[in-house]
Every structure is written in C-alpha cells, then in structure tokens.
Length: 241
Image (cartoon, rainbow, N blue to C red; front, side):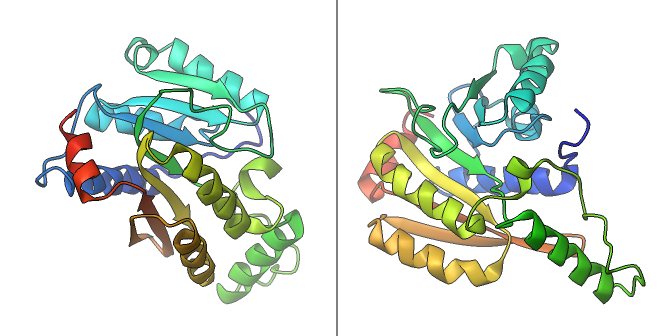
C-alpha cells in the first residue's frame, strides 16, 4: 500500500540467513529446513517480506503479526494469492499497541525463532533529524528539508522511547514464553542501545545471549538473540527438527 515500507531485500535476506545459521549452531551446523521449523515475525508489515524469504529459502512455517490493520490486510492478500505461502504463513492482528508476544503466541504453541525489525525512532522529529544528518554527511545542500531515507507509516518507523524501549518490552514479555520459544531475536539499529539491552537481558536472567553485526551497503546493524533454554534443554529441543 502507498506510504508503507518497501524494504530492500538484501538486508532482509541477510537476517534470514543469520537466523538459519543461529539454528544450525545448535544442530551440529546443519540448517534445519521444512515445516518443522516455525518462526514468529513481529511486525510483519504490508509486504510480508521475511516470511516470503524464509519460506522460499528454507521451507519454514511462519506466523506474522502486526498492529496495523491495513498492513494485515495487505499481507493476508499476498499469502492468499500464493498457493505455496497459503499453506505455510499465517497472519495475525495484534489488538493491543502495548503488547508484542501477548495475544499472538497461543497457549502451548511453540516457535523455534522470533524475528523483529523494530521501529527505531522515538518520534517523527527524530526520524527527520536522522535524515538531515545523513544528507549533510553526504554533502546534500538541501539537508535542512530532507526526505526520509525510506517510506513508512509511523507504526513502522517510530515508537515512544525508540527501539531500546520496544526491545525492552519484548525482553520483558519473552520471560512469559521462555519455554515456548527457542531463540528470540531482534535487529538493533543503533549501537549505543546495546549496553542498555544487555542490562535488561541480564535482569531477565536469560541463559544465553548472542550478538552479530550485519552490513548491507553503507548500513551497519546488529542482531541480538537470547534464549532461556540451558544447554540440555537446547539439545532436547533440536531433536524435534
């Protein structure tokens, strides 16, 4: 739909390949493929891009959630008109803008992986300031009146407190589903937010944290992954693959 993010594919594909490597690291370096692997995409967006890539590359099953009803309708339409996706991707509306995993993960439902590209600006003003800074660094004389680096509605780009607050909420909610999800993951756009995220993960008493840096063109981002499962529980989990 007009105004919604049109995501660059290479960066999204990199996230999926990292996710595959993460699962492989717990499975004798063998990437688990097929419908036995189930992934939750938080903020699936109107383009449903992560489920499309993940299913095409690895045959995984997906649940995609979003708070935006227009994005939900668009994503559902993509799934409905693609026979292969129709059997493997489910789109769910998150009815509360204050919750992330709650209302989406069903009782007894299990996910091998959760992924998220969180809104990373605290406000539209911050988003514009970021574009001004980038344009100035690139020598653009019109940096004072920038066009955003990319399209997107507010729910895709901005959240109160920025990405660190959003990820903090995700960490807090993940404790409730500690035995229903193997790996929780999120992109982290701003490196200065990592310290605060690590503190929150320590407070949540997670069993393991991993961080990977991802570079696409001039953009560098990070992926933080955490699990509540100890080594024995991880070994038991992968037997299902």
